[in-house]
Length: 260
Image: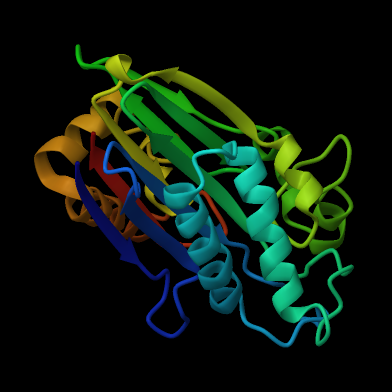
């Protein structure tokens, strides 16, 4: 296993709310990748005294430990347990029922000698590369189905957050794990994986510099740092040309690349 990780904050004035890790399995026969994108809270009280980086570090740490050590649990079961542990860590001090209680998108991948398991919740992306170089993107597109005018309103977005007919993130309810996109493929069909938060996947889905296979080619040649540098360059060039197409000029951007 060879793994590389790179992460950039959206602004030097704010902490990076992404979180990522890779780990070898305790069996020595496989490994795991974990990537989270913390959801930036609105400028009003959300019932929690903890910042988003506290939440993503707690949740990410639990996911990494469980993914590497509990081969008897599915990734959905691991996500449910990690959410439960994290919620228990601040249940007594915070209002976990608030719709904006700290939360994050999730990408998990885990492999052993026989198979590769995956889980994606919300708008981060997992890429699976075959030995022949074909690339499959595993996505949860429910947030993409929300109209752009709805996403411009905190109140309108919150009505669809972790709600039937809307979209789902990892917050305080372990039951959300059942909503994740999950699957398993034979290990022989995957030679490398990559997890990207939406700040990194902009190279494809916002700026259209190439498809997911092209993106994987950049990762293989230049590594995660190279991809993130390309994204930042595109953001600057589009801003200078007056062509920024999202409300954030820069977003926290994280990529994990692992050759199995």
